Image 1 (tube, rainbow, N blue to C red):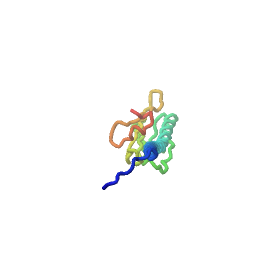
Image 2: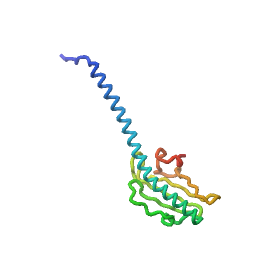
Image 3: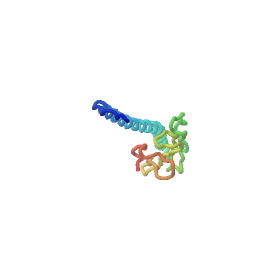
Image 4: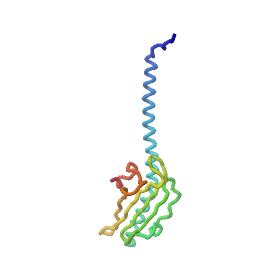
Length: 152
């Protein structure tokens, strides 16, 4: 003969509901925190790119052309970056060039080798205009982590 447990008390039922809600809130908070961490890592890497873009633009203002290298633009070699694998500047002419950012694997769907490119063009007023390239290739930086100027 099997003995059935007694009815669940209201107190236990209420406790179970409260624990369930707390667990769901904790999971949502954890997901938000993980995305925040990835965004912070991407921002740290993009900080170097911002400095490189400024140095290239200043070099253009002074010399009237894009620099041949980042070093010529006054940029030091990138210090040990936690989240940026490589930065490369490739001038294609005196008026055009591309700044390449290659990310390390940092989570949130960003695999090692994910890229973001900034294309530089000198406009008719002699100023550098920057445009993001996010449409070609594999391993691109996911849109949710790009800065607003780089969103399609």
